[in-house]
Image 1 (cartoon, rainbow, N blue to C red):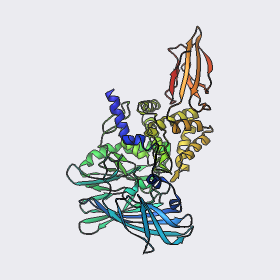
Image 2 (image 1 turned 120 degrees about the horizontal axis):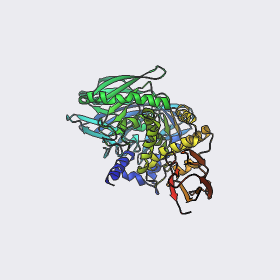
Image 3 (image 1 turned 30 degrees about the horizontal axis):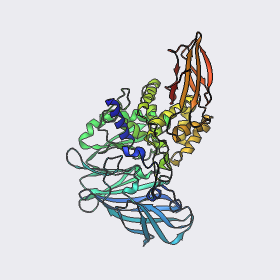
Image 4 (image 1 turned 180 degrees about the vertical axis):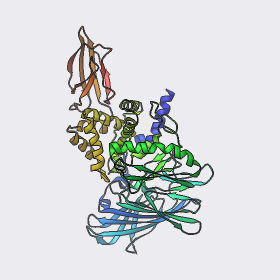
Length: 554
């Protein structure tokens, strides 16, 4: 029991803090709406480009900077909303070098133009700001800036803000539905340290005495929360991955200088992993920007083209056998890297649909296991997840209030997807659907409903009831059945028990020859005579379907 409890605590720490388990399930505030709603003040413009410059004073734990926001007017407007944490001060906002008036409501900043911006017009506003940013209490789950020191005593700084939002440290349109097409990140840091951010390093140059500027360019759309800075005594290790079509992908590892040798050995698992993911998901989505792991003072985060790595060169999760079945790969590398596909390439419009990021990423861990080991090991890996699922809240959260659903979105979504693979009953078709999602929604923001409809359409089967059951209800569907042994075999009665009386998900049992036999349960009792099957032989297919089995008296 102690081991199970410890494992559960570890899983919950991976999937979110304990407080997030029941995060605002009933009441929401005006602040929540301002943060999460795609209001008219946000939908009126589309962000094309960010030019962010930030000076980080580590001694003072202070940041000062500016962000130029390049936009296109989607509708006519005179006021737009940007976002910045209340504790950070905006000193000026300029449009065409003229100051604009603005006012705040919590973290929302309403910028007022002197003249109406007409639909189709392009413009730039520059926001100047500064102050003491939020310090992370338990990064990356309770995020912000991590001002720490490495084991040699040198400063080591990182940023993590998923859920919390990028506006915790820089001004932007902090809504998942709008990603810039590209971005420049200019970081000014102490001259004796290096700064690693997203994309490719374009320049490094002296700044004011004692500081140096690092300019990083992101050549693709990027989630705001994926934008990051990593500051420390880094050394740079380089490698190259060759895709199946011969294209070369730059691989960069930025690690603390004293960890260079252990990192070289430990990161040997990266290229086999990329081979597996490209086989099933398609090519790495950000070839121009490259693939990078950056050592961080916190466990990990899927920062696009600068993946945060803090597993301290352990297998599993900080040395704990996260797989539950004795596999020894580095969980953080495998999970955070596949977010380059699920979360960074295919991104959601609202955090309520975060299962698309986390559920597919968790399911892709099993893709890795199946690729590197075998099919049965992958099924064992999935089965081991069941003990970590609570089934106490819906996976999809509340829309327009920046609300995540249940942490079950990780493992439960993965088991749901495995169930859908079984129901598709055609692996070639299934894998074409998974790869098709990556291709057809590449570099886009999507809704859960779009993903659900796509899978049903491509599979040629209506999975809407299954999606509703697993994503929008707390409890599992209950497969209720009875067995009555007779001279010739078993009398088998069965039905589904769920609030949706039209739920008719097919199921399988094992016959006397060990073969899977399909049945089509409904909410009404049905009966079968299973000849030649004893009670000891009877088995439901619990490995390939996720449900609660409930045996009742005949």
